[in-house]
Length: 83
Length: 158
Image 1: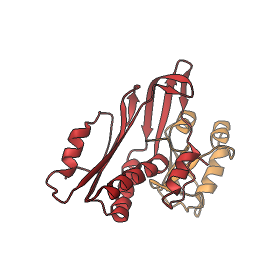
Image 2: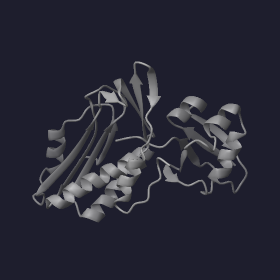
Image 3: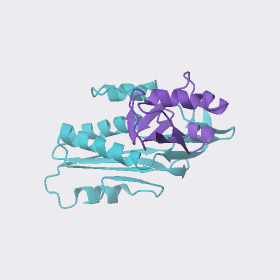
Image 4: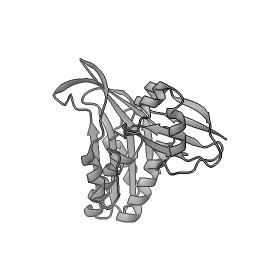
């Protein structure tokens, strides 16, 4: 199934604003992040496990155990710093 | 009534915002407002500019949800959040949280609650421009602790 991945702030600078990604049915956000990490050296670095990376599914903050569905909008970004 | 949330580059006027928020509501006996501004120094370095990025759509939805929580928890009458994005300069206004309620306690508390929520749960990112170049601002654990005082778990800074 296909999901849309968006990046913000330092992750956007490293990986671009968005990309469409094909993942197996039943994938979680964790699985997607691992899949992306293997897609290029830049992804491996930017989404590395030593990095603080937060995520959202369909525009809501969530954990990496969240299940993806066809057409989902996923976002990865650093800890937020508004206000 | 005006929209509760505005994310934009344009500046805001505190007096006009409060007037709109409490217009025609005779039940209001208290107004509390917080305005965040751009400091001219950070970590001992002079700041030349501050660039704010956000996640359009999610930002508005996240802040709407925070306001819903504040309405229920504190019984406030109305709330308004304005957050600027794009390039700002030292001394510029960044964010406004304004709350109306019958009595002052709820207004003070809801205003602080909303700011504590916004700092760790709304998708904004700040990039500071200094003489040495630009750098993304690090999230602070103290902001998670501020939200946890309200009994809300937060691990944004990690």
